Image (cartoon, rainbow, N blue to C red; front, side):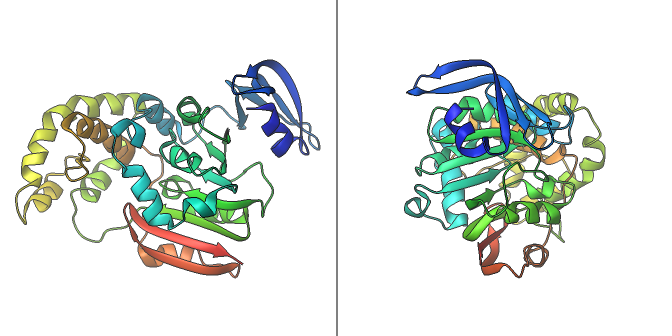
Length: 335
């Protein structure tokens, strides 16, 4: 955390104790706080700063440890700057319907950052980004993005975000809410942080009523997989995907019946044939996203109508709910 970020975002609520700091290599007038504490003015509660990241946590253990494992193992796999393809950018811009021009100079909350694939996109707009995750994936994000722009990363809980309500110009949350214990309450928490007139964009896993090669194997195996140690589950997936991916590819290409066959076979494999990835990248994504599908402690898909109901509020000014690139997207402007 930069000293300037502490003064801008936390000084009114927390006292800073610095244990270790260095000069900011990009700004001689600033410091990077590598180790220290933030102490709540009112309660005296202490939160550690570890590896330059404030940790607003009550416990070292949480329900998102699997995400910390995957994003520190696959730090750059889904980054556009790594794949050479505009996959994350396309998903971001087409679904949020925001523009670079409107985001420049704004303060944006990114809830559930993972390794920072979307943080990279957000930073490119010239906005100030406050990005957090419950897991230690924040360390991968810090490594990937910390020197790219005006970015503050912290580790924290979506149910206890250390910022006042009505604070942010924009809130962005993709691939997160369905993995929280109470998705409806999680949405309310991040919506509360949005300023009047601000915009929020979320996406949410779609609930399917029919067989699919994605959801059917996933929800068949999840009762077993989610109880496994994440390290063991990842080892199993890394073992079988290289053998199964070519077979899955052949079956998936069978006209009309390929997807149905795979749904009945119930072998989880996130095989992205039409995204422009080369085979090596496709194998890496398959391992990552198969683990991502099976490992989470919570996974609550919703229909479009259920997402519409979740975002209902008397504080909504404009709402738009539609099928997006990763399920259901909801864009809301706050009154």
